[in-house]
Length: 480
Ligand code: CO
Image 1 (cartoon, helix red, strand yellow):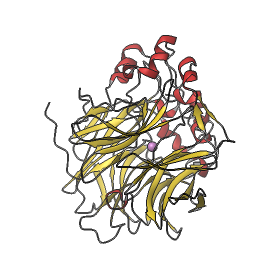
Image 2 (cartoon, rainbow, N blue to C red):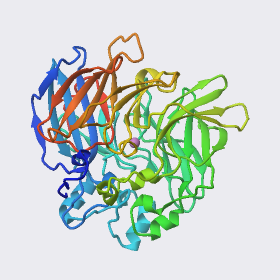
Image 3 (cartoon, rainbow, N blue to C red):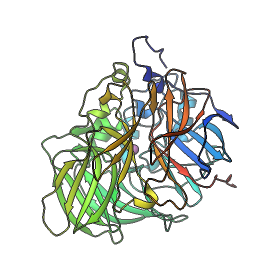
């Protein structure tokens, strides 16, 4: 979009667009892939910000591109494609946004802005945030009721509807490993706004489990799930729904930070939807929960917390260009939530490492006691000098780090080794920007030792992505 000035950081290449689509059968590999590692890493993220007649304001808002690394028999193939949903098509046809994005405004009429609150077709489907699977459907999501279903092998966008309830459903649903059902929350905006907990089984419409009325809903991005409970953490970044309708700007620009208000914590029975506890704690901004579990009559809930939502402002283009470090850094925090009627919420910081994009051994540990979290160092907090991959021992607070000069990794995704004896027996997969070579590679670390096993080079750079998922079996082409 813009040329990189000589004096800006080398990481800036990660914010440059990628518009060309590639299919590469075999990438050059250094090192040796674990023999057991077989499957596909699917990732999404923003990839294009200059639409022709409009330049988007914020990194999050770029048109979504999917990336696939498939590992089979010691070889790695790669493909990338734009997600061609209605948001992409509108931008392609007009050179402008067709829908309101997180921090960019399509300059719609008042009528269309009002309709956003009530009419799903008026809400974006630019799935640049996360990927999930419901039955045999692979979906790219943003905080929208319309995830976009795609073919996991060709990355082609499929014309299949899989609607989710409300106005702002989370792009981080949990997945029940036994049933394959998703469980998530949504915020329904309107004259009577509510948070709703819902579940969605393959091939079935979503079912609402609980509704909580709220006057000024909070911006939430993810939530915690234990064996028995779902926990919503609603910090004081809140919106008056009518303002969202009347005001121009991106979605988040109608939300206001009320630092003197408490963060509301709702503990719900994840099966019946019954409200188990209403708790509160100090003002907190959070994108990502790490994990939560129950112990001794309380819920232990770990998340990446900020003292203010300044992190959002760091990713406007002018702040990216200026390499802004404004806003509170992230900290890994443990909250202890009593379930016996007491109201005192205890909080402690688990580590000195400022990490984001946390992942765990999800299949084994989500909702139960665990020891290891993996994440990347927060770029702005580190002055973008380097971005490490961090393995955190949440019990002892110790950490192991992988870092290399000029290497800017994305979210590290844990893949368990078969019949693994230990929680950390497996691999960590991360797409790394190599600033020296001006290209990216798939990095494979041994999660137990944090030593590098292999890297598979892509000939071009891959813009910094958001989230993704690894699927064990190389996905088959879906029949339509
Ligand atoms: Co996220």
